[in-house]
Length: 280
Image (cartoon, rainbow, N blue to C red; front, side, top):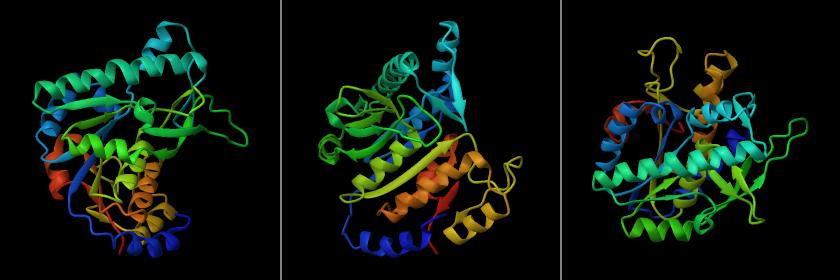
C-alpha cells in the first residue's frame, strides 16, 4: 500500500492522546440490508452493544431495482455507481429515506435510541464532487470534513447515530458517498476524542486467504503481510478498498479495526472473530 511507511511513523504520535471512553463504529453492507431476516437479527445484536456507537449503512440493491422500474439506466465502473442527477434522486430517497428510517425504527423497537442522519444534516459530513482524469462519476462525493462536535454531542447524550451514505458540498448539492469511506472518516475524526473501534461487517467471515473457503480466515493482518498478499494477487479485489480504509484509519489514531461477518457481531467486538487489522 502506498505510503505505508509514513503511516506507521504517524501512528505513534496519534496514539499518545489519552482516550479512555470507547466508541464502536460499525458499518454494515448491502447484503445485510437486502435480507430482512439478517438485518433484523443484526440490529438486535447491534442494539445490545453497550456504550456509545455509530452505525453506517450502505445502500443495497433497492435503489438499482427502483431505477430499473423507472427506466433509469445504471452505470457501474469498477464496482462504483455513476451517479447522474436522476440516480441521485433515487439513492437519496432510498438510502437516506426508507433504509435509514427503517433501521432507526427497528433500533427504537429494541430500546436503542437512534437518530438517522445524512452528511447534510447538521453539516455532519462535508464533501466535494469527485474529479477523475477519465471518468465522470457524476454526483459522487469524497469526504472533506466531519462535524466532530455534532457527533460528540449526540453520542454524549447516549443517542446512537445511524449514518446514511449521502453527503453534501455546502453549495446545495447532495452527493453519493461510499459507506466504507464514511465509516473510516467518522472513526478517524472521533479518534481524537474517544477510544475508537472500527468494524466492517459484511457477508464474509473475515479477510479470506481463499475467497471460496470460509474457513480460510486470516486472524490478523499487518501492512507487510497485506502487501505480500496483494503482490501474489491473493487478496480479493473487492476487499482492497476495505483494507486500504482500515490501514488509513489506524494511521490516524483509530485503536482497532476488525473485518468480519455481520452475524458474528458480538465476536467481532470481542476480537474473537473476523480479521483484526493491525501494525506489526
